[in-house]
Structures are given as structure tokens and as C-alpha cells.
Length: 115
Length: 116
Image (cartoon, rainbow over all chains, first blue to last red; front, side, top):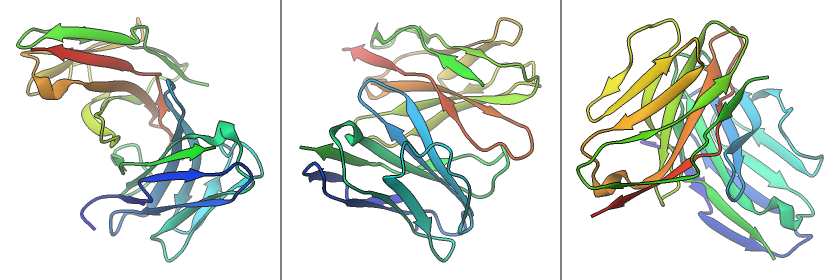
């Protein structure tokens, strides 16, 4: 697609429920990133994919968080047994390659609210 | 680990005037990239300008320019002839240029208001 697409745009869910957030990167972009933006904070790195592999999962806050990427394209970030501190904007970005000379293109994020 | 600090949580500027947003960073690396991103209410992070540390010349993009002071580890953004559409959150970010690097480290952002 022309840009990075994320869905849903907004999600309100009850504490304890599981949620899935979707990211559809730019076609041909091999690298994909998830970041979390909590209120009043900068962006916090969660996970990076190169193709379907995730060489770095170090940013995932707990084992309730998991992510996968299939077909070198769409990625899903899953949060199990959601907690109120999970409320944040989850941003996805993709790039043509891993190197620093490749710029990121961000999506518009999913605003997740846990009630 | 690298850190990025934006000391101005909020700034305001009159339309058509010039404003400078501050950013400092901490790193032991000699080669890296620095970025300014704009985040309007739509939430999408938009790249404003990029600076490669090995380049001494300050980057410019139309009304946007940076003052990169490598020794001082300072990377400020100057917006000239401010427009209403410049109102947004602005984030400074750092990325190592080393092999295997991919992660951006962000500051906490500066909220810029433009006064008509």
C-alpha cells in the first residue's frame, strides 16, 4: 500500500481481555517496528522484525505481549490479560531495509484504552 | 545506552515568527543519525529533518533547519516563518549507524503551539 496502515484506529477494552493490533506495512518493506507511546512520554521500542523473524524482542514489557509477522508483510501485536498500564498509542513503522540510511515510515497508530 | 532529552515540554510561537526547539543527547558513539519528527493530532510521525553525525554541515529542509553541535551533543530545530500547520508535537530521535542498529531512541517531545 501507499502507507503504513494500522487497525483498529481506536480500541477500548475491558481489563483482563486480550487485544490484537494489526499493522500492514508498505509493500516491499522488509523491516517492521512496533513502538508504544504512553501519555506524555516519548516512543518506547517494543519489537523489530526483519522479514518474518524478530531478532530483538527486548522491548516487550512482559510475557503478556507477543507479536508475529507473516508473509514478510502484516504484523500482529497481541496483548493478553490487558492491564490499565497498557493504555497507550501503539505505533508501527516500516522501512525498506535495516540500515540506518533507510528511513522509517510510521502509521497513525492504534489508541488502546483499558477500562 | 543512548538517551535523548528535550527540556521544553511546551513552546509557543507567533505565526510568521521563528522558533527553536532544543534537544540534547548522550552517546559514546562517533557515528550516528539524528532526526526530528513531527506528530500532529493524526498521530502519524512525520520525518521533518535528518542529520548524519559525520556531516559537519547543518541539514535544512525549506523552513526547517538544525543547529548540530556534535561536541556539545546538541541538536536544535529552527522553524522559520511559522505556520498554523506547524502546530504539533515534535520529537527528537537518535539512531546509531553501527551494523545491526535499527532502533530509534526518542525524547519525550515538545508541544508546539502556533498563535495566529
